[in-house]
Image (cartoon, rainbow, N blue to C red; front, top):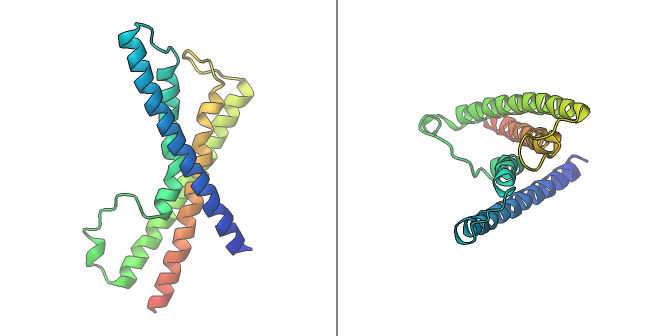
Length: 165
């Protein structure tokens, strides 16, 4: 059961990563088209800037968990490289636990704020007048996946500690 969960979870991470890539491509092309329209036709796309701002919120939250899983993030290892393998595994275990707990807080508070905005039917203040919960919902969703990945890493780190004994 746990193995199936891991496989499904990893597939969801890949889907979220590709969604972030599509959003990045869209905003890149959209910004270029908006710039051309602004300077060549004197008719900018009025909603493009606002949509780009929302996409810039979505991209990191959609892609962060797979970046963590693949160890693709920046890591300063000046101190940890000097530690023994056992102590290094301990530091990584604590790091993963703290990251998981932090993302749990983001998930809970982000979900509460998003649900509150949904209940109150708050709209975004800009041109598009989107329901604000559609903008904010990526925070608890992305934080949840990042939390799960941190806890998965902590399990692996704990196994490393046990193997060192």
